[in-house]
Image (cartoon, rainbow, N blue to C red; front, side, top):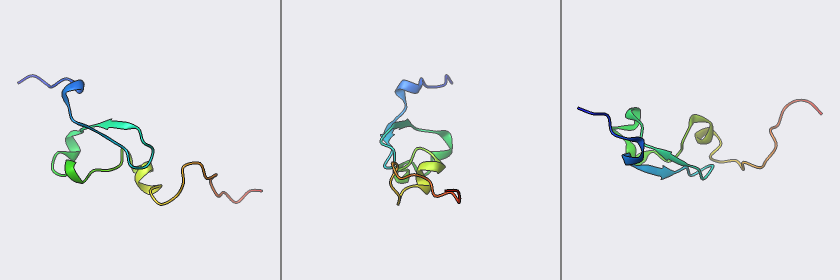
Length: 58
């Protein structure tokens, strides 16, 4: 069986960064529930992307 082309895979728009992302094998069982393109976007879901990181330095 031939591997499908990436252009033939379903895609979504990330709810955090707004970038498009395509289906991955690890999301096969819960593709309908996937909303974020990465762990980084998922962890930033409640905060604003333009907000500077809060380090300890001034």
